[in-house]
Image (cartoon, rainbow, N blue to C red; front, side):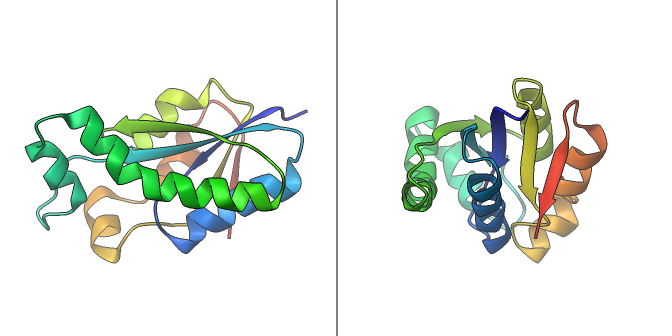
Length: 139
């Protein structure tokens, strides 16, 4: 029985679908949404502004809060409360470092921009191949 589910989320539609899948198919599970803010990229993404922030933790929380608010609103439609985690670093590595605390990971088929996928690789593929727990890929 799956009682604890980790759902990695960015601001993509596929990540939202992964959360919907977890909410619909594991209504009795404790669901935790993880958002990973990566290191600076050559395109000057939001992570670059984190690297320049005086208070890294506060800046990370501020960037993640809108995403977490949206996730909480979606969960409320299913009458479920979710937990949230913010991590800094490489997305696949951060997800895999937390995965063994859960019974399963529910992840979207892809997320982020095309440029991010070309530079950092396919996070879903890395998580699927290396996870110590079952991975459900939602589309």
